[in-house]
Length: 109
Length: 122
Image 1 (cartoon, rainbow over the protein chains, first blue to last red):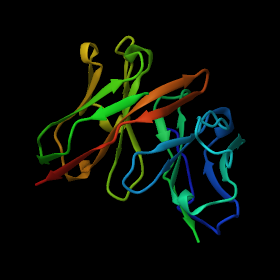
Image 2: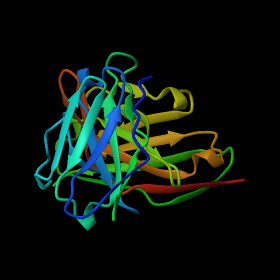
Image 3: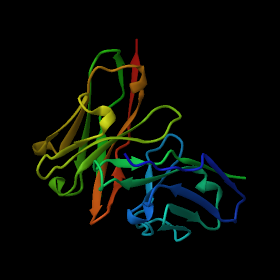
Image 4: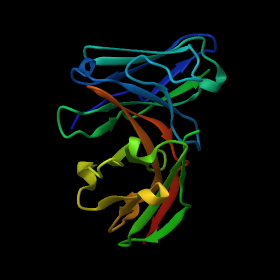
């Protein structure tokens, strides 16, 4: 089934911009969703359908998707953004499975 | 508000079966499907399967085909996940999650249960 590739870790200083990528073959044709997971908590949706934000998610969180790479961008990073981030798609062209990337640990320096 | 409340932690022996419940509230139960996702200790998220609460259609992940069964009780707005023939690799936190579909190409999880820790020992 569809494979999503994320970098294991990303580090950024407070106030800077964090960029987390999610690679997949022609991922630009799919809707990509992003989840934040803090230790001991359930995942939380932060971006859906490539670039939309659920209510309550700050504008600092944004997404894009084109070609073979989707990107989650977190502007003006805060200490509270430190968490694991997962991308996810629906493999509608194959077995209709829901697929997660391996996750990226965001460290705020 | 949308809530998904799961059953409590479980300890199982290898070879046993597991059944976890997920009770939904705060929305019309039959309007959205439910997926199950698990997370082994220190690992990523792994999708297990989906059930439609509208028509009970099912879709299981290839890895779990033949070993997992999803069922519903519409009268109590509860979804159940049964996993058979457990082994130590099934030790994980199991989550249920409500699905939203944006045609034609997006399915996402907007609400999650609190998770159920399952420990499998030999």
